[in-house]
Image 1 (cartoon, rainbow, N blue to C red):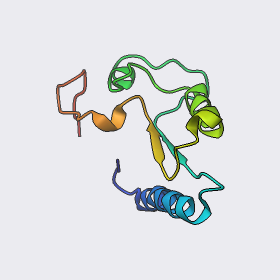
Image 2 (image 1 turned 90 degrees about the vertical axis):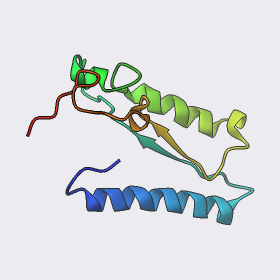
Image 3 (image 1 turned 135 degrees about the vertical axis):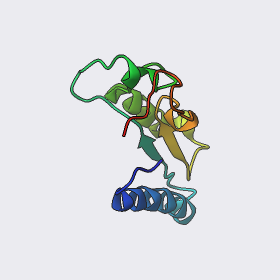
Image 4 (image 1 turned 120 degrees about the horizontal axis):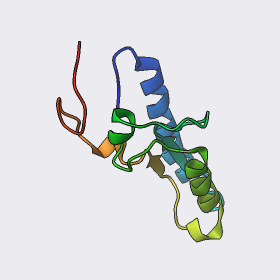
Length: 109
C-alpha cells in the first residue's frame, strides 16, 4: 500500500522484501531468512475506536505482541520449512478495499 509522497518509504519496504528472498536463497539451507511487514501497530497504549478501528478487518489496530508472537514462531523449530517469506501482519488492512461511505469511511477533501 502506498500514499502520496512516500516513495522513499515504499522503495525501502520493497527492498526489504527483495533482500529477504535473495538472502534466503544465498544463506539456505543453514540459515532461514524471513521478514515481517507490520501494519498499524499502536505502541503508546491508546485504544482506537470508530473509523480508525472499523477500517481494520480485525476490528482493531495491532499491538506490539502481535508482531512479537510471529517473531517467536519464526525463530522456533515449528517454522523450519518457512524461508524467503515476507509476512504481512496488518489485521487484514491490505485485503480491504475502502470506498467512500463504506465501513464508516467518508472521503473529504
